[in-house]
Image (cartoon, rainbow, N blue to C red):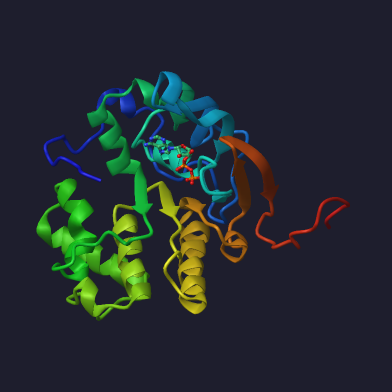
Length: 278
Ligand code: ADP
C-alpha cells in the first residue's frame, strides 16, 4: 500500500464526529454493545469488476455489521469475495453500489486522501507475505507507520520498542527480516500493524505460511490483542483451527454471505446446530 506523507496528521473535521476513543462500544472485558453503532457496516454492497460482457460481480449485495470488540473469521472458497470485502473494509476500495459505513461514515463519498487518513488513523493491516522492508531492521519496519504520522523520532522508538516487546521480540530490534524466522517476521508485521493502536486489525491469512505451532502462537497473540486491548479483528482464513479462535465466523459463497456462526468466547463443536447452551 502506498501512502503519501503529505497529508495532515488529523482527520478533516467531518471525519471527526463520534471518534473520541477507539474502544467506546465495549467494556474492559471485551463485551460489546450490539445496540450501538456498528464499527463496520455493509448495506446491500455490490462490487462489479469490468463492464459490459466482461462484468464480474464479485459481491452480490451484502448486508453485514461488525461491532467494536468483535473478532471475525472470514471463510469461503476461492473467488467467493473475501479479498474484495477486505479491501472495502480497509478503505482500499469502494463498493460499486450500496454503502459501506465505517464508524457511521459513508466511505464511498470520501476522496482517496480522506480514505488514506481513515486507514492511517483507524486501521492496521497484516497480510500473508509479511510485506516487510528487507534491508531494514525490525524496529525501523515497525516505526514506519509512525513516520507517516509524523511522530518525532524519540517517541517513535519508544512506541516501536513497546510494540516489538508486545509480540515477544524484545532483543530482536536490530535484526533484519532475513535474519528472522517466518514466525518472527509475521510478529514484526503484526507489531507494525499494532504500533498505531488501530481500532481495527485486518488480517489476510496471517498464518498462511506458518507451521502449526507458529500459527497457534500468532493466533494467541491476536486473541490477546482482541481480549485485552479490545482491538476489533477481521481475519481471512482457510483453516477451521484458526477460525476457532474468533468469536464469529462468516462464510462467503458466490459474493454473498452463505452462513454465520457466533461462538462467543467458548468454542462449540462445529457440528453443533441447535438445542440450548447453558
Ligand atoms: P476470494 O478472496 O474469496 O478468493 P475475491 O474477492 O478475490 O475472492 O474475488 C471475487 C471474484 O472477483 C472472483 O471471481 C475474482 O476473479 C474477481 N476479481 C477479484 N478482483 C478482481 C479484479 N481486480 N478484476 C477483475 N475481477 C476480479
